[in-house]
Length: 116
Image (cartoon, rainbow, N blue to C red):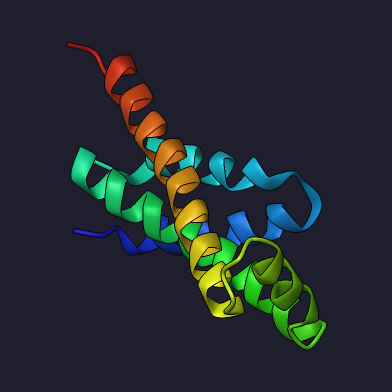
């Protein structure tokens, strides 16, 4: 089950932080929202992955349309992908993995601090 508040928080704050901070900035809200809201490892995995993936994809899509796809097309050609949408999909997956790492870390932190 996906926790909607955590998903929206990770997505929104992850996207906003990625505007000003380095590539790993989506990890911070994923960790924080996971500590506050997530109650199971499965929920942490799904919510963190989707939140980070949507945040990164939104930023990549914004940049893609901002410069008419020139940058993503050139980078896709540089990597031999051919299609800029495949590169955007790779950004989706990479952002999801970063969000997943933050979310599962937050869940494990919450579990370790919980009294026995």
